[in-house]
Length: 308
Length: 332
Image (cartoon, rainbow over all chains, first blue to last red; front, side):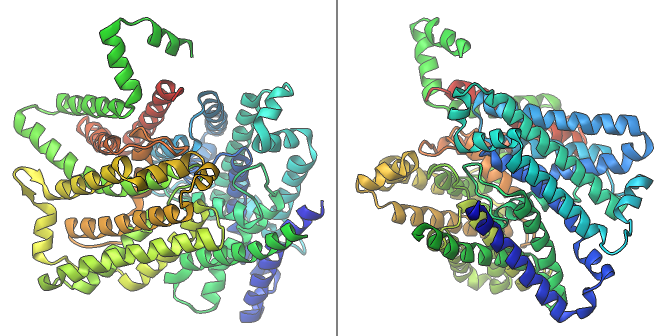
């Protein structure tokens, strides 16, 4: 457990440092309203990051999550709003497609990177079909939920904490979570002890699909409209978030809490730049730089860990 | 699996030989697919030799950019699982913008401009490799992070300006020689070079060996680190060069000119029959896959389908090609 704790310390520390920087530059951000503004766009990113984490956990990678979230956002802003039954059926169908994708990838021994790449065309085509031009509107309840103002702590803080804790208990404590991590760690061992790796992979992908759907819905709840390219950046952000949060590409070593913190760090990085009055040209660059920086620091930690 | 056994056992000698060839040369499938899409695209059009010619001409022109970056990506992928360069689009954009800004439409500065584009590629490659080797960041995330940085530098240096390439250069990039697009000739040159490196030079053996088993290769005396260095830097140089060529072709660099090449470069490697798990690559397949990808889009276009349907079909076809190819290649 101590290794896991160490692993999570670095993401927490980097988020804290960044937050301190923001507060130093703009003390007024240190308020209910300020925090909400800083982090509310982190909620959909965090959900997408969890989705990516589920895929990385079983040693695959999902290059389609950005277009998938865009697709879900489009469905939410159109069908779910106007025709709930059809809308939810479509979203459920999308989750089923995700699970099927996981099953096919495993059954055929396909490279996930290519299949998801192909699927990213598929989702973006679907999104354009549903919403050819930006528009739509958020279902009232969703908008109300994302814009709710609970006492003391804003939604933008509560939501990530809840997501992180739930997934922590699922991934680290539940038996299904252990099996899924086992698929990433040693799928042969899981197979030989009588579990269906096919089923487990499908489950992992299905859960990823579910979080993709949630991410799309949360995004529409915030922006109140959608377009077919709304979340394209999420593919890269989600991978970066998982890694930033202490996850690894292989071996089923992931941390849900870390992933959520990673997503928050990346969102905050963009705001930090604007508080520094740096040109917005460097916003993407800053996310890259922070990623490199954190990984560099992690290298120091892991070396020490290896020595100890 | 049973299907595969039947296929291998049942046929008679001639057919058997053919199947043997096809299963050994996975890239033949990609050529068949490209030919099929070409025929399908022609069937949708009004027909005529002139149309076929112009479609082929366009296909070879656009495929050549994909081929050059695809070859770079192929070498990277050959290095084994986890090796993918996601910074290709950003490197292309950066090299294109910087080179065009330097040339400032002055025909006398073409050669220095080209050198600058290649230099930018070199710099990007060194940066990538530095992250991978010195900081031990997994290649996917390293190239991802550096692509953010490159993209930012490109935005900063470009500032939305669209500088025209020097006239002679633009004419060269868009023109053709003896009915063959110049871009395709350049890509062909790069391909031949890449083929020689991969198939006939010791470096190619080293690259394949490192991809098949890094540890075994190292113990066998292959300078694995140097191989990785060469491959990553080479890939970035090719990306920089493509950025230069593409910017000259399309009348100026813009900030999202590389975007589609991220998916494209990976897709052509895999559809072309190289193993995504590394250690088994081929150059001819890259051409087939690049032609296939372009013809696929133009076929769907010529059937008058909307952007949405086109994307959906593109996605489904890519996935089916991969599924089908995996069956044939399962044993190799």
